[in-house]
Length: 288
Image (cartoon, rainbow, N blue to C red):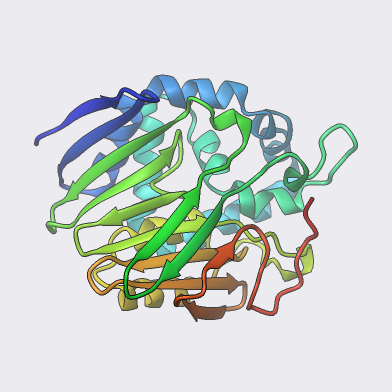
């Protein structure tokens, strides 16, 4: 197995290369082991994890939600579930903490909010994109905003699978690749935008968005990526910007729970997407 790491000097963002990997657990274990310090630091400084997710997980009435999330996602994506387990074991942190980080968007809406701990949307700025495809250019410009707890707790991973697929992903410490952006050797790339729906639009215990974006890293075409999104049965919706680097196509795909999906193909008119639904009819939370 070949592995290595390099530092991007301008901002000390590390690129870690591993593979070919025999299985998903090995991927998670190697990443968790290499970035153990960053994962531990994030866990200790992430106020949403410490003040909301972990206390909620200790409540008796939280167990049905956490159990349903665990069972449904483990059954749908057993490999990625094993990747989570590998991250926990490799980094030496409790598996519950890794689970809560990766399903934070699916859990937070069900935590009673107080004045002391406001809703995440009030304290978290997410990403935005400008997309355009014309005869002379095809551009996807992504602005990676995130919670302050992620400062210094992100890295790039380049993973080669036993199948021959290779992907590169910008990764948040403790989370599977990638809830931000990534690309693979099949010419498929993507960026992501959070789109907060109203609580009535959320299906408790359904598929987590981190697992869907992890699945996109193994798509062999933009059509395959779209099919993977369409079959995901998500708990909370998301916006995906799918990019085919070989045919110069870009699709904005908005999703909601209950298998709702809307696809907008990008053309010469510049298209901007941030953290609100634009073309899928979903009741959404107001943002500031």
